[in-house]
Amino acid sequence: MLATIRGFFSQRDVLEVETPLLCSAGVTDPSIEPFSVRKGQSVARARFLQTSPEYCMKRLLCAYPYPIYQITHAFRDGEVGARHNPEFTLLEWYRPGFDHHQLMDEVAELVQVCLGQRVVKQHRYRELFDAVLGVDPMRASAQQLQSLAHEHVDVSSMSGDKDVWLDLLMSHVIEPYLNDDHLHFVYDYPASQAALAQVTCRDGVWVAQRFELYVQGVELANGYLELADAQEQRDRFTADLALRSARDLPQHPPDEHLLQALQAGLPPCSGVALGLDRLLMVALGVTDVRDVLSFAWESS
Amino acid sequence: MATFSTNDFRSGLKVMLEGDPCSILDNEFVKPGKGQAFNRVKLRNLKTGRVWERTFKSGESLEGADVMDRTMEYLYSDGEFWHFMEPDTYEQYQADAAAVGDASQWLKEQDPCEVTLYNGAPLSVAPQNFVELEITQTDPGLKGDTASGGTKPATLSTGAVIKVPLFLSEGEVVRVDTRTGEYQGRASK
Image (cartoon, rainbow over all chains, first blue to last red; front, side):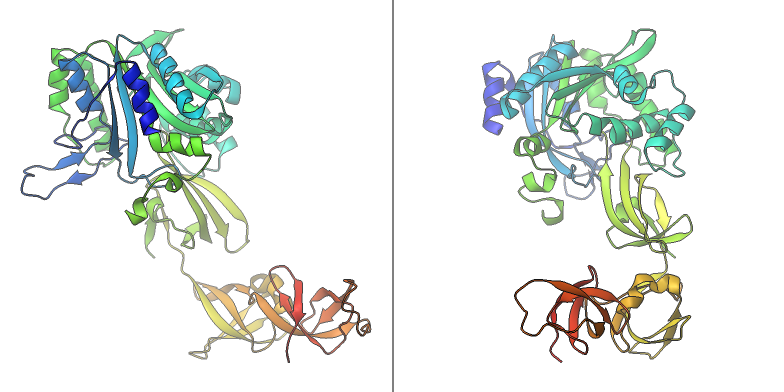
């Protein structure tokens, strides 16, 4: 599969790159926790194992606006399960000049090279919630979503903001619904879930120009029309850190290298990260990620 | 009692949920790439036997339950309570019908069994997987008929009724799988 992927990108003149795994900045996203390395002769301040190569690859793009891809390991603390291993393999690539719809098409082509011909379907986040749950996720209140969640999932006294209920409904009700062989792209996420994507106004609501790919109920990829505005990026880092502080999570200083590079200018581009362990799971028809790892977390 | 976070939930861990002791059967980590992580947890309510599937936000915690499994010797029943003894300490426990449940039909005096204690009192009783019991009532045996594959009902010394092959007769001891209630074979006396 790795050879197939490298062949795919080589044919398209996308350059393979490598970026460091152990960096001075960690991710600020409150729902992703990096491992930190605190001891060692070369470690003056804590360093962080990268949760994705995104920051470094964007720095490369700022310097060389060229299509690039990377196959690398990424690390996320606390994520162990049938579909999660704290150390996993990501394929991440960036396409200057592409919007996220063009990138979705390329993701579909690559995945079909690996899995064989599949039907490709595209769903707006909003339309998907309407079709499966009969609710407008953009306009519904947290209260409405909470009672809807209670109808479908036993959650007892769970509390949370609107995004918690959206994530719960997405992962517990909608994901299983995208359970067939088709490639299901979901796009136009709520602006509150933009992460590093640009937001835009569509039909009177703010949406994130972000997409996810689901196959057989498994989330395979997450892509963005990349945010390029350095000030907005700084504001999002600050908002992330405020959320981290409210949730009593460790504070990781924002990546000043990335912010500086964005200041110099990121070319208009789209980027996507695709979980290769999961792609292999789907290709082999297995349901536990341990079956596709040489040595899973417990034995590594 | 200690509290346990969803990260600590392992199969067999005993926790309190809505005032009842529960045993964790399965814990599945569910997380969208960006966003809130959840744990979808299967638990068995140890009082009712009912299985719950409940979702928690990752990092939420539950109080541990004071639940212990002990191998004890079944002593006797006085009609209202069943009495058990810890073989090491000779300490005795009495369990009511709710705790003993269906296990009563497999309990033979002096047999070992698994007693689950909750706050020091029996909460449930599980017989051994295989028990050997005497047939107390059945239709007369058809001598030599070991091939026809037919069965007949037989009442055992504990009151349980199971299906046995036609050739068996009263007074014989049979081996039974208590999980299915199925006849396994004749026991050597």
